[in-house]
Amino acid sequence: MAVQKSRKTPSTRGMRRAHDRLAAPALSQDPTTGETHRRHCVSRDGFYRGRRVLAARIDEAPQE
Image 1: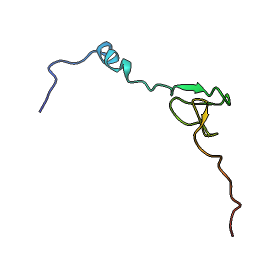
Image 2: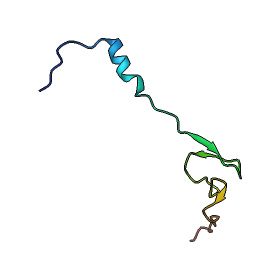
Image 3: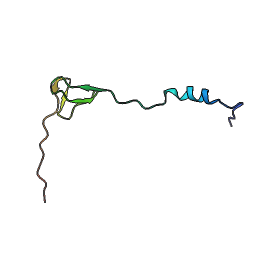
Image 4: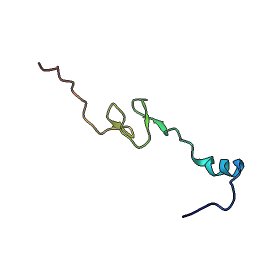
């Protein structure tokens, strides 16, 4: 079983954890619609890199 030989100082611990933070997702703006969306993902309108890649969604009335 691995046992540390000497105690790690708070400075060393902090330097090791320096890159563990969460990064915010990269956002971009669609050139056609101007909508903000995540990089390399289709926007909610169905546009990707200025072109429509998904057909418009048709909302159906709720069925009883």
